Length: 109
Length: 109
DNA sequence: TGTAATTATGTCAAAAATGACATATATTGT
DNA sequence: ACAATATATGTCATTTTTGACATAATTACA
Image (cartoon, rainbow over all chains, first blue to last red; front, side, top):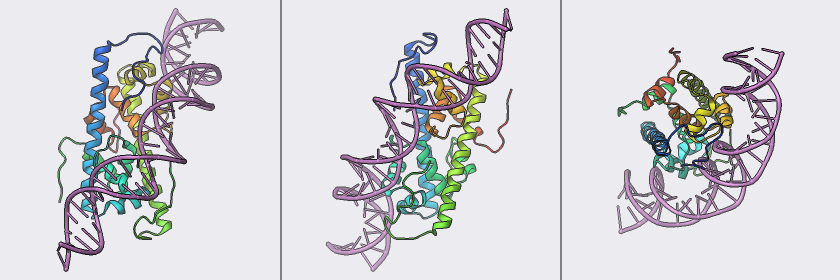
């Protein structure tokens, strides 16, 4: 998930200690991962609610079944873009997406 | 933004008409673009509110000033992942992110 | 006005993500 | 148990995205 970490120095030096810097970056990455997992979960629900198979959804979004499976499995090598595209393809509205970002994900029948 | 479109046929054929299929894909892509633009806007606000320069933010997220500029400019070749990472690096909470997804983006002083 | 700081734009090699495919493993209905 | 159907997992060539860098344009402030 990280890149060419700790190169820094673009303009001025130091700004943040290396230890807290490390922790900060980690926590932000954790937030992103958690966000993705929430949306992956929301996708599973949305797809189930509409009785779509992974193949169906893959067709709708111009992707493949295996990729849909990976999205729902929370595969780290899946972009947020793809997850959100899947949600939209599954018929999720922006408002529903917003709700899915909330603390408690309600399971509507 | 699209890929190897219209290859289809994974399992069964047809499922959706090509015309409405085209429109559907377009509308979903539009939704994604709009979402990105909203978040780009939210980032600009968040960064301004905290008096961070693009260089500051770039350092915080281990990226570069030019990339931050591109995020905020709504450059289509910027991933949702990067946008959200920028928001988190700018100190935006998940709850605030949720609000930013709402219909009206309130401009808090 | 100048000049320092900030932001915008373009390019590119390297890194990451993608769709497609094969195939394994459930799950469901008979 | 069997056969469909659905989902999971692994691999890989191609496409997309990335950070870095150069540099232009804009803004702020003396």
